[in-house]
Image 1 (cartoon, rainbow over the protein chains, first blue to last red):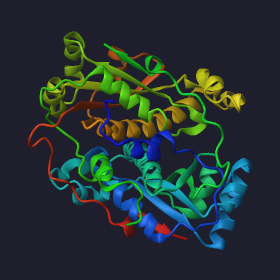
Image 2 (cartoon, rainbow over the protein chains, first blue to last red; image 1 turned 90 degrees about the vertical axis):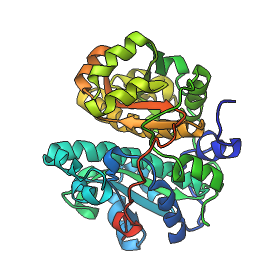
Image 3 (cartoon, rainbow over the protein chains, first blue to last red; image 1 turned 120 degrees about the horizontal axis):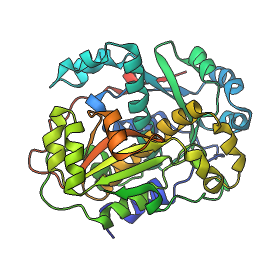
Image 4 (cartoon, each protein chain N blue to C red; image 1 turned 180 degrees about the vertical axis):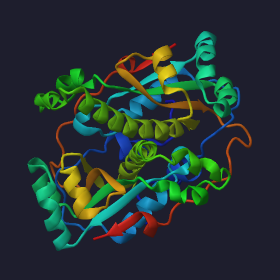
Length: 195
Length: 195
């Protein structure tokens, strides 16, 4: 076996981990979310941009605002999830760059144009969204990531014009039968070529 | 501690892992890349799209074609890296969807328009690019991901009109002093809010 990561961790993060559509009632604590962030904040991004921002939807009032913005097929499971996280990209991340990338503070100057920033923020926050899913699994929890929701509505209700929603993630301890059967994956030769 | 993932694995994948700018001469084998893919192929994407495609640049001829397309600051380290991987998004991923997402083959119909496909491919391949970086680390190797290159030139030389480059990743065993000092990260409260 060519991997150094031990098999238990491989199973926890990838092989046995599954997207969950139903959860037990066990709450997801603030301490768990802090531990997840404290791990995944180290995941690399270009110039250490780290544009991911997260809104944890916890209150009944906020949950009620979110429900009608979810695609119909995602509504009930999101309302029932112990924790719902809105993942967004900060399109004004460049303001933080001199502090975040101190050995090359001029990096900020690459991002004077908003469309360039939006592309960079979207891409690098997507990398961080993947680290976040891995982090949720590292906490022994299951993630239910979704892109089926009203993006403009979620931005208006929960974010602002400088923050673009990327994904909404249900989080919790998976219930029995929480996942569909595993779908097939592409074979190595369908994905990877050598030149 | 709220994480289930053991501390050794946390260090390997996130806490101690660093972006590397220099590598030893130890080669990265085909078996290692296969093991990485066999792990990270399970990372979740929307509708199991899995649009990531990878070109491994191994031959001298291919390396020589790539070098002038790298940003100047990335050129020497890319030429010297044991393995260089071009990560790309397959904008025609929807052709595979009925096979990849068999319990809802109609998902393909969501992607009849090319701009919709390109957005989905870019986002989901970015998630997979992050899984790939985690997988490289799971193999005990270091990744050096870069977005500083001529995107149109790399697409023309190594891909085709249906595949958009996302990132180029140098891979190998890190040399002494291969990494810059760790840059700061945003605090929990700067990233995460609760409503």
